[in-house]
Amino acid sequence: MINRKEFCPYCNANLQGEPIPIASQKAYGATHFTRKIGITYMAADRIIKWQCPDCNQEWQRD
Image (cartoon, rainbow, N blue to C red; front, top):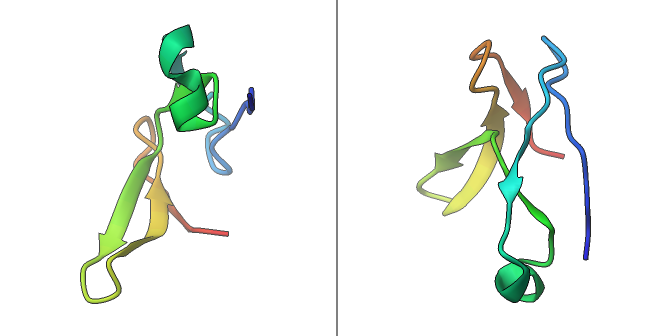
């Protein structure tokens, strides 16, 4: 499973969320939830930007 620590590019807040229960980690393909907020473009039906829950800054999805 992926244990990916993420940080806000603006305020450097840790965006790694709570641990995912071990029984569900395989389905998620990760060990932790994320705190970053996905901003969706409805016409494309996908996340186009992320937002930090601490400083509210946005950045483009890679």
